[in-house]
Length: 326
Image 1 (cartoon, rainbow, N blue to C red):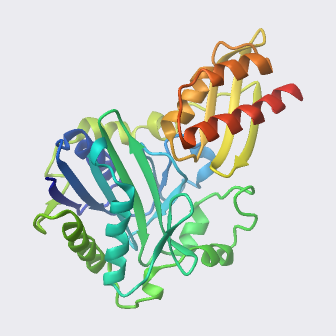
Image 2 (image 1 turned 180 degrees about the vertical axis):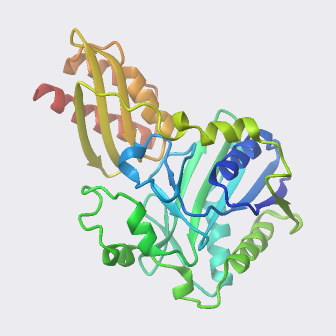
């Protein structure tokens, strides 16, 4: 039988909140599932393999990089973040999403899951989700747009031409929706309470919320990593060869550094949902001659299954055509 735990961070520091998320991931017990609720103020959070320089305007707000894949998201105090944390054998996306949908329905709003990671109302997105897996543990986290400032969202997020041709506020409003526009009485506090209620209805246990402040736990080591320039930006070297495109499963930007026509460094920036797979594909290309057949063999050596097979195969075929056309 699963035991449940609800944790609420009341600080708005993105680096502390992400450090706390990872801390909880490391501490989750074999038969435990946690619901972690948190907010960031004036922050853009990018996916693990995204190029920070191209995803956001960083002046005037905080920036952070998370462990999971997916795209860049804007956080302000009109947004509520949730994270489900558990061991891998207890991961159940359908059940986790049901908690969110039930909580939103408690607020009088009928919502549904659509696309690769979105929760929508009448075709408009109010929540994006991302996922992270380790050998024995996992988390699923996402946003809930309660009353977000869309003008700030548009101002700070750099949306690629491949993803959306117009960056205008009208285009953003056509794609996303605040829950407050459907229920003017909804609040962050009310939404958090509905999430806690739905969580214990689905998983059992008591509706006891642990409140955490930066003084509650000493997370300095994790905090310093999340706050560091190296983690948030890292080095973006000048590559000898660069290609980019968009697949149904995400955008890809690849850079290759060469020495005597051999790949000595490979970096793939992507908003694909599986960050470990993206890193594995990049690593597989290192030490390969810049020849279609050699790159094919390197990518075919990856042991993958399910949807990951589609990602690797489509990437392999595309990369082959790019190299062959050089």
